Length: 539
Image (cartoon, rainbow, N blue to C red):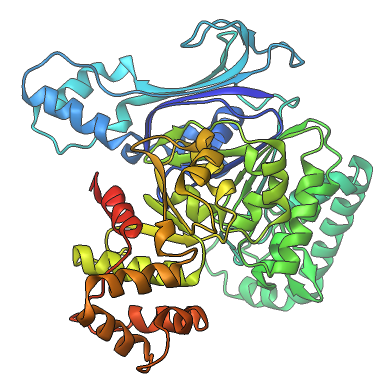
């Protein structure tokens, strides 16, 4: 089991200390937050390869954290003593993990445990070339040609291939490469289903068939070439390649309903890749990396795929990146890790019943809450429309423009508050009085509230129990002109009760207020204005 991951100066990560869960890990964040990079770094440390190639062959200047590179070149320009940036990736395994062949204390934390280290640093053999390059006012790009890649275990011995006891299963639904003749999944299938004797038999028969094709098909062509040989001392001919590089397993391509694997729908590819991973008999596959399992799948297919991934998790440590609230809720929001600008956010404890609630409410838009920069929770669609219009009237900006996410949750704001508290996230919660005092509702939510960070705004009990009488009475008390304007906007004819009319047309009146001309600015209840002041305080 991976207990800790330390990354320094690798791409978006200037410095990351990640402590994953024992079984399931769900990694979320905005685009470019570093989700895929984190998975990539862990895989690199375990496998010593990237994209199937040795790291030294893939190394380039853009691996290095851009802020560290800028700081290094700036220090050089200022004639300050400095050292070139290096990349460090460390994967700490459990002290109880067998085998113990990688165990040692040669790591940045001097912890005695098994583990992997990737270090990318200047090569001392090229120190003079490096300095010469830096003296010539180079562009702010590191000369990685003068760097070396070191891959070793914590026992301080170099590694040349991944230890077989630490297998990795990788499922990536983000890309499809139809041009590839064979990929990792078909190779895996061949490995699992065909033993050495069967492989040897197929290989011999394959060579015989190609020899026969050469004799029967290319013989006529070779006779023509022989006549054209001219001054050639040796006979030139065309033959089907019989070398090991063109062995039979290189040209075997999985087919689905007579179509090559790369040409079936990407959704089908995702399901098949997952199924192949599940059928793997390699008991050494301890780690499973799944990139965005929701890609290319319908709701039903996604449900089926997640069932399979849950099977994969049995006895293994799983890492999933996702942009789907459904995936997050289904796989357990208590397994969440939030990445933001290369920093892993701390995540507090959720109660068991709240975790169970999110799992049952799989359509709950959890990720909107997790990723929102500023968050406002309201009860229903009418509250959402009115708050957004009130915000615009007060600030001159839309909530979207100011990156404020307004989410309607009904009366379930307790779950949202608990989640925000676990994430240490700021939030304004607006709710109706429902025949109770504001103090009553704040007391019920007291354990998740924090002054200046998570606050609840409740209507004035004297103005009514719900949004409609709150808005109606705010304009009635503001004077005749405001009452007349609100009646005109919501299309309430003279003689009707404004309060009753709006209560009987909940979303209709709110939509008409939200769509009214910019010059039509009604009065809003105090609790809405206070909430707007709260969310704009730190802008």
